[in-house]
Image 1: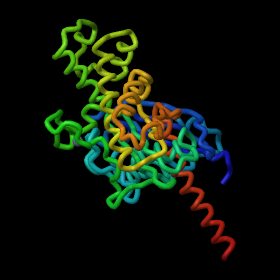
Image 2 (image 1 turned 180 degrees about the vertical axis):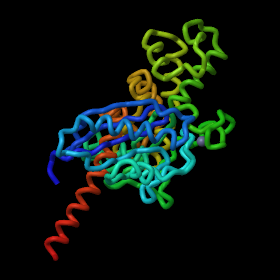
Image 3 (image 1 turned 45 degrees about the horizontal axis):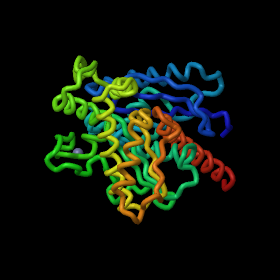
Image 4 (image 1 turned 90 degrees about the vertical axis):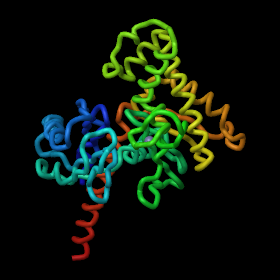
Length: 332
Ligand SMILES: [Zn+2]
């Protein structure tokens, strides 16, 4: 296994898919992105993914082909190689590893997006050297992963960390899970949009937001308007941050982490979101934890933590395989 080996790290998000070429040291060499299209079936999405992998690999020098593919996807089962009824994609349950290997003859691993981001953050990001931390992914939805004593804590059914479905208001907004008032319906890109529309209904401020249809309203557009001083957009981020801070106090009381790492598209809003989140956290956290838990933002943002994390997992697989081959050669 030479250090020049290159693998693909892929993050399939509810809005965008990121395909990166990554070397064995976690350095990302190149990247391309395309929209995920939530209404598409997996078999409609697949050709676009395969084309993107082929396109990004066309720049590789001859003699150094792609060594493997690591994929971060929502609701992924790493043992089975499947993606199982993701809430934000119209996929049902599919075996993503088999589907890709029908087109590309390389080792493929698939893992939960939040787990891949944790691996990326632990190896190459702000959580390097930490033993106990929580990673919260604020994208289209709200994902989370828990690291206890340096190991990913997955729970008995490998589904730990569903903080997005903590109930924050039992009579609140309908959630994709079929219940009401889940944190994700407030603290996520889609929750932010819903908050904007609630504020538009309850307040009289005028402005550009009143001219935008719900389907055209993105978190990024709300962010740009908030930066420009729009009072509704700013209030929407403030409320989202307050809900986030309150939610983090409950997580900290359960798990006593060293830090919480915030990751995902919404984190790009910076202090507009993180400021109110930190204030609300310190205001409501149990005094026992006050001033002790760091709230950090990832420096591997825009999908990069999941990309380099998924790439690291396939690198681990390849290195284990090469170690086994070497051991077989030594013992035979
Ligand atoms: Zn829910």
